[in-house]
Length: 101
Length: 396
Image 1 (tube, rainbow over the protein chains, first blue to last red):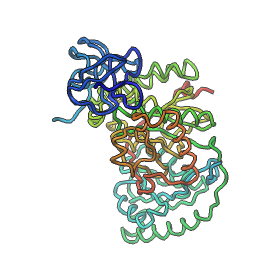
Image 2: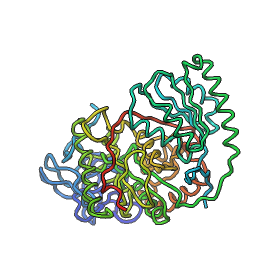
Image 3: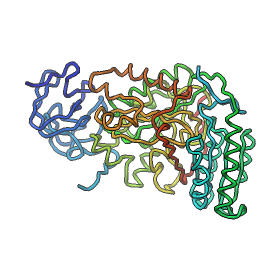
Image 4: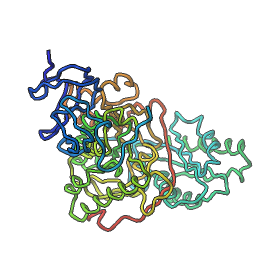
C-alpha cells in the first residue's frame, strides 16, 4: 500500500506549491510508491532522508524550485519520482564539490 | 531573569572565563601547558598563530579578551613576534580586567614560563571567583547563530526553529547576529526586502555579491562534501536553509568581525574580507565564524547541525540544535535540542522554537550546554583584512 502524505507517517512533502521537487521525510526504498498530494510517485532508487525527488517531469535546462526559490538548473531530463541531486542539477552560482568516489 | 557578571563597560557576561592567549604559534605549547591543569575550572585557550602583524587579528583579540564572558587574560608571547602585545595588554588593563603579558624569552624558557603562568592563573581564578553575579535581562544578551555540518534537514527543522527563537529574542529586546555571507548566496534579494531602509538593502546585496566573487576566485563555494551526502545539491539550496536561521525580523544592520551591534535587533555579520583575495578562504571552518560572532559581543551561540557537528567554543557556550532525527539518535550526547522530531511529526516548529528560547534563558543562567559539559573549547583565528563599515551599514 502506498504511504499517505498526510499525518505523521507521510513519506514525502512538497515545501511550497510551485516546487517541482519534494523532500523525503524518511529513507525511501528503490521501487516503492509514495503519495504526493494524492498523486503516486514511483521512487527510482534508494533516497536518504532530506534528499529530493522530482514531483513532476522536469526538462533539461529547467530551474529547480524548492520553497518557491530557485536552487539550480536541471542538466538532464528528470522523470517524476527520480532522485534530484548533484548528478542531474547544477548551481547557477558556484560548482558543488564532492569527494571522489 | 538571568544572572550575569557585570563588567566596567556596563555589559554583562553569562560566564566568568579566564583566557590564556598565545600571540604566535611559537608560544602555543607553553600557553596550552599553563591552561591544561585548569581546563575544567573555566580557563580557556585562545590564540593567533601568525608571526606577521595583522590589524584584524589584533582587533579580534582585543574584543575577545575584553568580552563580557571573560574575567581576566594571560598573554603568552615568545617575544620576537609581530603581534602588538603591548597594545593588547593596555586594552585589557583599561577594561578593568586582571592581565599579565608574559614573554617566554624574558621569563627564561618553557619550564619557568609554565610555572609563572600557572601561578598567575591560580591567583586570578581565586580573584574572579569572588565576583558576585547580578540580575540580567534577556535584553542584555547578544546571541549569534551559525549552522555547521548541514544537510537537507537543517533547512526544514533546526534552522527555521532557530529563526523562530531569534524572532522571540528580538521581540524581547536582545541583539541577534546571523552570518555567513558566503552561505547566503542566492538570498540577497529576499534579505534586501527585509532591510531597515533601501540603502541598507543595497549594502546587503553588495555584501553577498562580494562573497560570491570571493568564493568564485577561490574556485569553491562554502560547501562541504558532507553537505551533498546529506542531500544539499547546490550552494543556493544550502543558502536557503542557512537563511532560515535569521527568522522574520527586520534586518537592522551589517556588522564586520569585532564590531558590536549598536542597539537591539537583527544584524548580518559580513565575514568575507574586503579588497583583493588574500590569505585564502574567508572562514576555514565553523569555529572561525564562531570566534567572529563572539568578537561581535555574542555571549551565547546557537548552532544547528544535520550531519552532526560536535564543536563548542572557547569563551561562549554553544547550544547545539540537531536537525536530523537519525543523527540525533546516533549522537544524542552531543546535542542540546532534538529538532528532528519535527520531521517525524512529534513536535511542531513553534514548539521547538520555544524550547530553544527557553534553553537560551537557562544557559544564560549558568546551565552548561552539552559541548561545555564535554569540555569542547575550540578556537581558531587566522589572517584577514577588512575595510571600515560603509555609511549605510548601520542606519540610525
